[in-house]
Length: 117
Image (tube, rainbow, N blue to C red; front, side, top):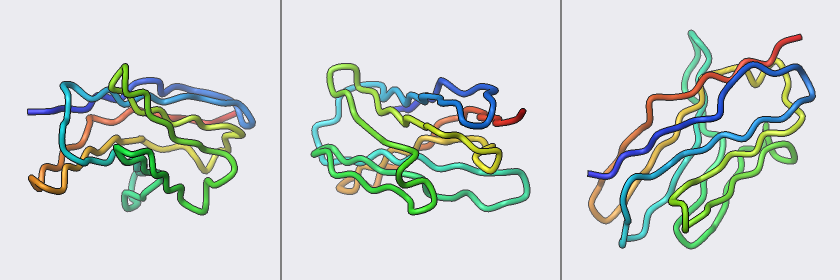
């Protein structure tokens, strides 16, 4: 089975940047896409960004212009570059891998991002 593992979270001040990484174990031959979600305690998990195997990108409106998503196929890793972080961006960030043709759907364990002065 293919798994995903997030890394790169931490504590930063408002205005600073972080880059999260989602490492995908193994090689996937089918079409797939990788999403980033985030969740605050007591809130619903919300979609942040997506990149597909053929590099089509979707970014949620509330982070557009500040967050970018990219994929390094050589490293089997998807990155979420977060610039201009705000206190409202504080959340646990999750990586999700979906392979539609097999209905495979897996989440990582999450990485905490805290933005505070």
